[in-house]
Amino acid sequence: MKDIPLHDIKPLAEVPDNSLLILMIIGAVIASMILIILVIWIWKKFKEVKEINLRKVYMEKIHNVDTDNAKQAAYEISEYGRFVALSEKEKRLLDDLNQRLSQYKYKKSVEKIDKETLGYFHVFLEVLDAT
Image (cartoon, rainbow, N blue to C red; front, side, top):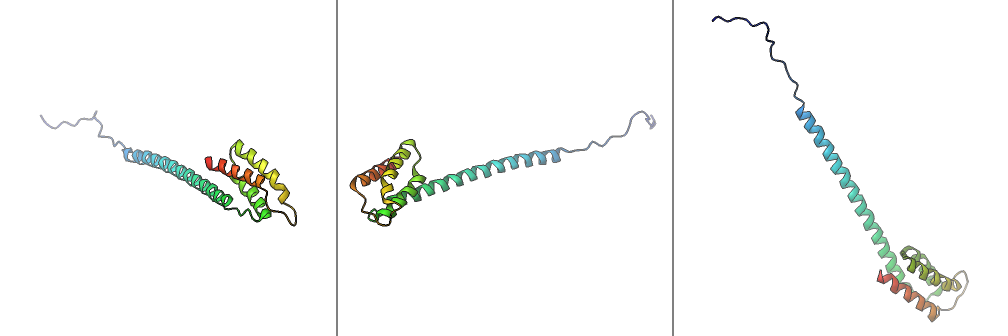
């Protein structure tokens, strides 16, 4: 048999191979999703640490209030108490304490803090320490 040319068979067609491009796109999408999730997780952890540290700082300041200077102590207890009182019970105790401390504020000279007000302050500190 001689070589007979076949006219009805077409030559091989080139098929484009995009599998590497598709793999790279899928990998980039997955990597970007993981990166976004990681950034969000780190952001939340950073915010939690910042909030906890601020609360600790205010708790330390309210525990170290000098009650001998009644006027300054009244202002400091009111200021730091707003930042550390979170629950309803703490807020109620702080309101009662602020009412008692109002007699030591806004005056030129004040007396020492009385024992009953100091008792309210110590109860407030105990409730804060319990949480």
